[in-house]
Image (spheres, rainbow, N blue to C red):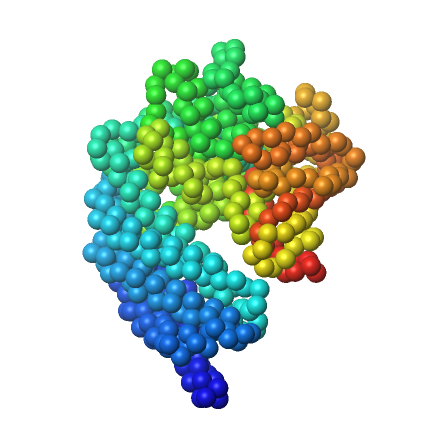
Length: 578
């Protein structure tokens, strides 16, 4: 009887494995084509749905269930069956119906024409996107719930691959769902809207990216987009004698009242649901106008968009491209113009030129979607809505720009960098973060976990930076840092419930400790000379079920540096970076 059972399961398992292997090879291309060409995606998704259904049928009969309850081999079979079932849900219940619904929507309708975007095209996808998101989220949750501890070999690998793939798919479909619910109203489908767009300057770090050097007021009315007015942070800070709002005492302990007194410092607080209302109120007090929401981007996002639109002409006749946007806006500008007002004007003109190209529908829709998706994933695009129902749709997404939230599986650190030089030296600082597990268990049982975060800051400026770089870039020693040297103030937010065990710096500088929103915050300053490095290291511990760790860093001007670092616990021996 046991031999018969083994043979039955072996044959069906081999057949199911063939179906899942086909899914693994076809899925990436098919999923990507849903947004680029739904008509092209549908046949591939139909094949994937057929493969997934067959794999599910082969691993869900009573004999398989009996075998899945046996020791050792049982967890392997149960995990295999869960992956097959989740595949069936993802392709048959989520992606395929969504692609079929999207066939009736032209991607050309999803970009502006003559300055107007057709909001009805998005509205028609709301219902199918919601159903698809529910199914995809359920599939990802099923795979996430698999206990990986007893798994070995090909099953362990398959579960890891499925977890990564299905989490990404669920996140992307959920983002589409939220966009279809949110964008029509935000684009003025029900009446005119106004928004404040902050362009963060990564050459002078603030926690969420950089100083809010330029603010652009935008209007939207039934999908028609227009640029109303552009202001510099300097002009919007002028005349403010005290905080425009009373910041909570725990915020003031870390950042004093600077974010509420200087427009440049709005994103120093690493929580955009706090920064958005602050920007709105400061703008209201300075201009008398109240906006319906606040958004933030940086020049790196502009470079991604320019890769899709192609070059755009600047007011002075020069071309701005995906290749030259970042160095031109964050470095060359300061070599060309000594007057900060001229720098602000150049920066505003460049941003306005990119906006006009987007408003006129320049570039391919798939390219623009991919550019925005990359910017959102890297936390370079942030949105806050004054309307509570709209903000509730944004919350919990990468767009929201909230403090990192941990869960039972992942412990999340926030590593936020702020310029302390009073300069544009952040352009030359390369941060590198590493996570390393100490004590941990790969099971889902709560036990004492330990993670070490190491941050290395390298000043890549030339050795003669004090004389070769413009005084505006080096700060010229005005705030106490020698020209060419960079001072970086780092705020490390520990995961909720975690506490520091050891804290060290290469210079011996002491940390200050605070708490904000249930998290311990460790703050330390580092002074880094040209061609030199500084390092900080923090080891934290907690009784937790987490077996993965993430560190979310301030996005920099260097698009090759990922603002997210991950490490998975692999048992007592340590961890591997992914």
